[in-house]
Image (cartoon, rainbow, N blue to C red; front, side, top):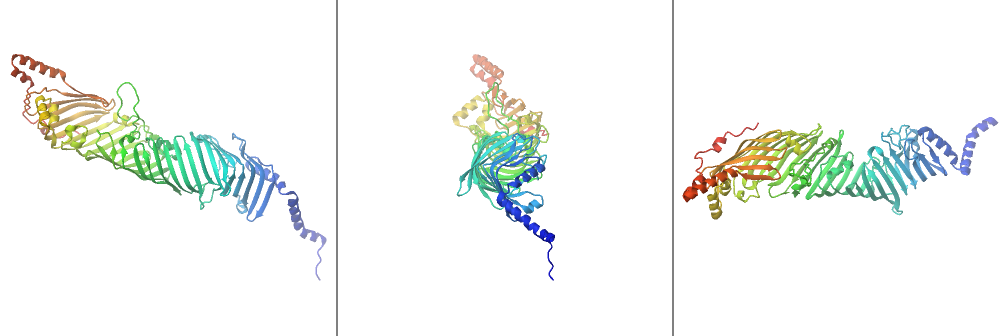
Length: 629
């Protein structure tokens, strides 16, 4: 016998179907607008901020997603924000992943905003208006958006913490290709910003596989940028491959953009390929100019611990030596009273050295320089580690030889502590003073060492406080006889050589030995010894005041019938040194010659005759070398 269903049991079994039928009929007749109030109340309860859906609400189920469409939507900013609304849009469409929602994660797919106005703000204490926790500090409390499409709209970013205020407008450029054009203006880290560009209308914010195209033409402060290429994973910026053209007034002006404390330079312009993947940024195969110098190479930065690490190789085929001036703190000369300073006195921006570490090699194949400076090539390895800058090895090819050394600048204290050791190796005398015709045929090799330690935030202050030693010496060689006769004021010999022509004589030795204390170079030995005469010097050089006070006394080795015999004084400033003679002794000799000449013309030569010392008072006395402590 088949059991019959009782009436209560029948009602119980049919109830879910009836309820479902009523829900379907209700949605068919009245839509989803009834859900607006619960959604708005739930959002307010969870975030403390009002969500208003003023237009129709529609839902479409396509498991595991629900497609939501709504009109006239707005969402409030937190109370501290300057703008009351964070989002106002004519229409909003998006899909919600129900699986993520079940795990209390809000993941929105394919978000489309029609004519949105978005206001994002960061408070001075670090709170961010787009974070949905009550304090706006939890970085995980935000809606995750996979793909975003903007159909005309505006975005305002106000970051008072970093002095950044940007207005961005987006317009559909080509409906067939889905590309959009954008314009931006405002300030970025205190610098004026203007930018235009194009991109795909669908921004793949979280997709780390599909790149989307982007072109940008921007100017941030004094820096101009043109770029075109692709980005991947816009939210996390997991990939980038773009051709970049960059120009500006100084590489140091890139600090707000890159966070790297690059040195001051002359104006620059560069083009290259910028590639980013994982934690590495690489500016590869770039070329361009810095000042009048060409540059090319590859540089890359990688986040290591708390500081980025800059590595690379840079080459200049022709480097203008003047382009090193701002790097070492030498600024343009300005009109002022008194002598012009020669030593670089602009403070180095060492506080920025703490922003990154570096290991970069630089090679200048040829140096364009003033004729008086015999520098031809430069190779240097630049390392920066925890605010300690090291140039090692540093190698200048100069006058046929080398200036090789190590320079260390320690900026871990308020005043930079500097140390320098430079070896002078085989500098050719004939090339050492290229503007002096009398030295071009001279032969000899100059060797020695410079060791200095000082402190200060400019090269001038480092040298002005320095202690150490300077030792230079030259062995046997050859030197212009006319040059040495002029040093001894041997008038008759000078006249003969002017008529018959100059010739070289034996250079026995040359020696310059200075002790340096608190920026004052005091002579220990100063000597130039030849077959014709020996020149002995004494005095000091003041690096703080940039002044010279040297006396050179020539001692003739051979008899000269007409010699005025006078010390030579080198005084004045580095900018305008003055070479003078002892006019009193010259006048006394001349007066004696005139007086004797009145008695007998032959006697007039007696005060002018120089018989020479008759013994070796040059290299033999200096054979022990100087004190180099």
